[in-house]
Image (cartoon, rainbow, N blue to C red; front, side, top):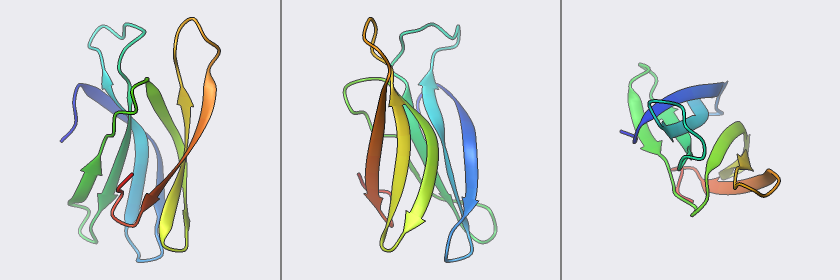
Length: 100
C-alpha cells in the first residue's frame, strides 16, 4: 500500500515479462503544494496482481517521472520539489526488488 492519493505516470514491460510502474504518491486530497510527495514504484506479477510496492521518503518531495531497466537494477528519474528552490532532477538506482 502507499500513503495518500497516487497516480501512475509510466508502465513498462520488464525482461522477465511483467510490468513495472512508476508514479507519485502521498498527494494531499486538496492537491496542496508543498506536500511530502513520494516516488511510487510498483512491480506486477504475470497475472497483473501486485508483487511489491515501494514509496521511499528521501526527506524532500519527489515526483517519479520515468524508469528504465538495466542489468540487475532499475534506474528511476525523478524531480525534487523544494520551495523556494528551483526544481532539481534526481537519478535513483534500485535493485531488482525495488530496494533503494
